[in-house]
Length: 263
Image 1 (cartoon, rainbow, N blue to C red):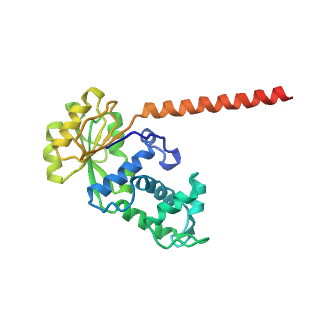
Image 2 (image 1 turned 45 degrees about the vertical axis):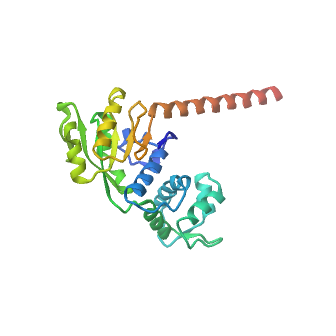
Image 3 (image 1 turned 30 degrees about the vertical axis):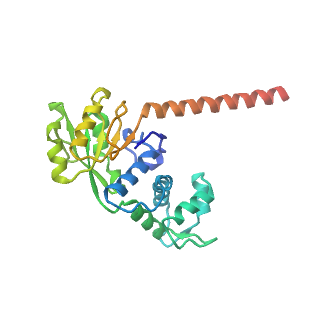
């Protein structure tokens, strides 16, 4: 399974001081949710499309400055997230009962149901290959705990990078990956290696028992069908934004020109 939907998460979702990690994706939410559902053996009772939207609802609800007993309607969620009301209502109905017309859901209960359905309450470990700047930034980012995940170690071929991070997480030789993963039953891997090393690193992860890979390397990976792969391309994400901005400016210029001609 290779998913290439890419977008940029707003700065408001990340605390100050973690700017290098801000360039992540909404797709990451979807992957983390699916990883947890797959790896923890939770029943697949909802569609893949719905499962990819649920983490976004959860993230929005967690950000609300409200009491858990406060209520929110599917229409309010749809309006805040610029989504279709019918789609939101159907998505939430798939995992939560208790939504009342014109009253909505208790926010605390809805958050609980989303976390349970996505498997975020089942703590899972992940490993990372490639301890360069991006790798270290991801390794030190604590926000993954909100998704029931923690990167417990990194691996690198460069002996100069080995040791421990400021957070006390080990950076180990690549040769130690198979035993590390098997001993700790790690099933999730993150690749932040150069493109020419990506396939070899992927193969080693698969041989080590990794079942889901989040790939930041500029290379498309080949893996068994049983392995989940999410391909990220931050340059492409920024290029997409640049293109959209150019188109937006073009439309604005055209509108201003039409106004001048009318005058």
